[in-house]
Length: 136
Image 1 (cartoon, rainbow, N blue to C red):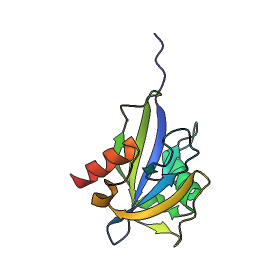
Image 2 (cartoon, one colour; image 1 turned 90 degrees about the vertical axis):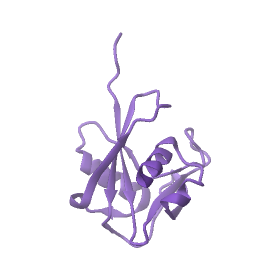
Image 3 (cartoon, rainbow, N blue to C red; image 1 turned 135 degrees about the vertical axis):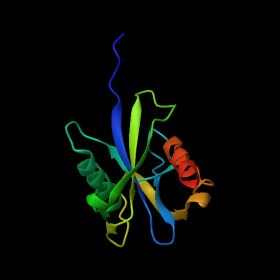
Image 4 (spheres, one colour; image 1 turned 120 degrees about the vertical axis):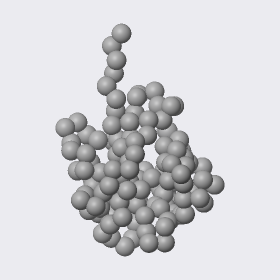
């Protein structure tokens, strides 16, 4: 039996002084989890350094620029529902440059929400697991 290597992705918990985190809502036309809320991030390209992927994905999805040196590794998530052996590396990013969130075509809305309130939204499995982790 040939085992497929895990697929790696990066995600960022971007927080403000008000202890709110940034969540993005997927467009309704997305194949996977349309309309669900998630933390920004995406796939690491082959050979791409992790922090470079994190910076690229956050800029692509939000227009915000993170400071890689201030990105702290937080945890990792491997959703049980993932058929492709996905492993998502989660970072906490407290310092970002940019005032306004500029959504990519992959998302239709954004919210700054308190972690407790995020659990009332329809979240991706990764985002739900992450919000529960942050509350521990």
